[in-house]
Length: 166
Image 1 (tube, rainbow, N blue to C red):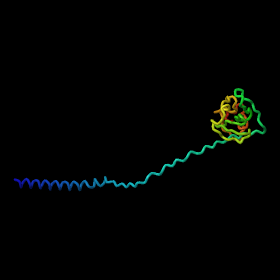
Image 2: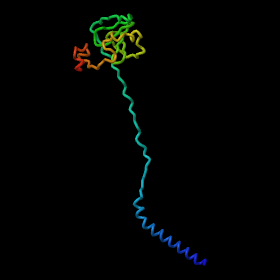
Image 3: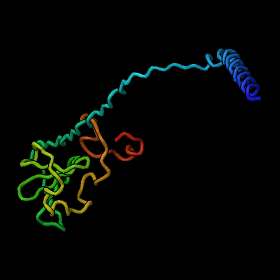
Image 4: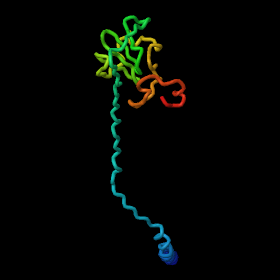
């Protein structure tokens, strides 16, 4: 009886081997279609280059007068004088000229310049304290003009500002 069980076990193993071989051969084409080959080469991405911010060029005002301009005392700040004519804000304090132009402060030793930009904290307190009523162009109201534009020479004629001409 033992022999018979051994023969049956051997035949079962043979049958299983045949099923596996036949099944593997029929499944081989299906498996071959699912084969993917990938080649990855470790090439890093190009470096990110950040250009530096462009330098801000602050152009001083081109303030020129043919003759010494008239100076008027600012009533609330008697140590400061202002120039009531022209297209620019010009104040005089302690023998120096100060101008607030396009959001920046400039100073000069002469009414015709040369003008150099200075930090707001370097502007004397009495000049900073001048009421806006004494500014030719109040802070925040400046418009960029070409030097040859009539608006750069004097005030805008009535009605022309609404038309965008100055």
